[in-house]
Image (cartoon, rainbow, N blue to C red; front, top):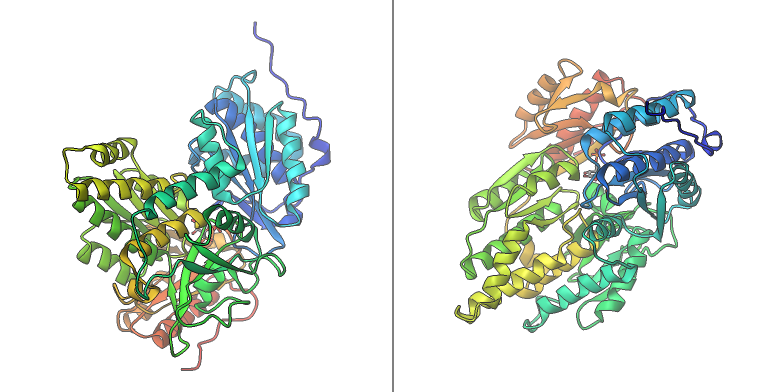
Length: 546
Ligand code: G16
């Protein structure tokens, strides 16, 4: 008879559960005040070892709260191909985190049994963290969890989230990795792409004015710039660590506030502004025109730029591959119209969260996915890349066909196929702009965004706000959707929806209309409805003066 399995968790008493509030594995893992996370990290260390044993592959743990304020922290688990954690395991994670200390062993044993895990199997976990000071104690809690189930760990220290995803994927593909191999891969592909393109005229400048959100993005961007050399891309670094993380800077601030980040107030007309978020998995571009008016080029713009260019290259090299774009409800209506009607590329709309976009995009030969907030990448099937490489090397084809295929091959090599990656996305955008000899103004000319506004409202319980249809229809509180519909219909080209954030304790409100004033007003009116019908807390939203 087999002996009953028992677990001895020697560090459990050092990481006691605190608080009674149920916490959920949200849009991108657990995220809350860093002070409340010690036991969560310990338990995620335990879970990651089980996931590793179950998949017989390396699993990643990224300690980050990304775009959230510095006092928050969080954890994102990375699956074997570098993708976000499998959804069934998200549920196991939520359950494991919410159970009392006295039941921890039995819940772990349930997972071992239900997932048929061979406990003697080796378990290996890669760990990385962003620059938050709370990252170090939380790392120690994570390592305790890994050790308590006899897992091996490899600590990469301060890295961007997409770097950790890349390391997990590469290792599981049997390739040796070290921190600089990431930069070497990106820069080699970018230099290859650039080799036959000469820069002339006044439109494209190989220079960016970079807002690092005072986080890991600035550290790694500096390294990338050193690898590249100024002739390929000059990087003027700002918000490189002296101020508070994400405070009035970074991609989320720039996208939501639609204004220049702190430290870049003096951006000159013609300069290319670029902001990343706290763990450098999102990026947005921006500039000011001669009248000092701010212009934003967000994730929707990146999707249309990159997908449009890939389409052109496919036509030039006469390859018929299935190319598609994936967006969410936050995508500007004008971008979706432009991609489907002008570029003639199919667009799918899925729920918010890179995990949903990524899997949808994988259904295509080449899938370009971006959330409006600047989170996205390009994914592709191995067979598609092999076909592209075959064309690039086929001497019987014309030189223009071969060149287009070689460019496409380099472009796909620049992209991070595991998850949205701000640094790789910057090189993707720079590749396309360089190839087209475009300024940001040229890029922006493709279509005109519908004016839009994002707001958030804090409510007593954000889970009381539920949605269906990729977050576009609100099912509770009862009657809220009817109110939103009535309001949206009363504005020209009005569109609005609300959903509970999966990363912050808030309900997000999105509104679009024909003018910025109307979009602002519609968003505020919907925010007031949310506040009234979903038990808002704090100050009530107000309608801005016109
Ligand atoms: C995470 C997710 C993104 C999502 C964002 C906001 O980004 O990875 O896919 O768009 O949260 O989600 P929510 O609206 O649910 O708060 P990050 O960069 O914060 O990790």
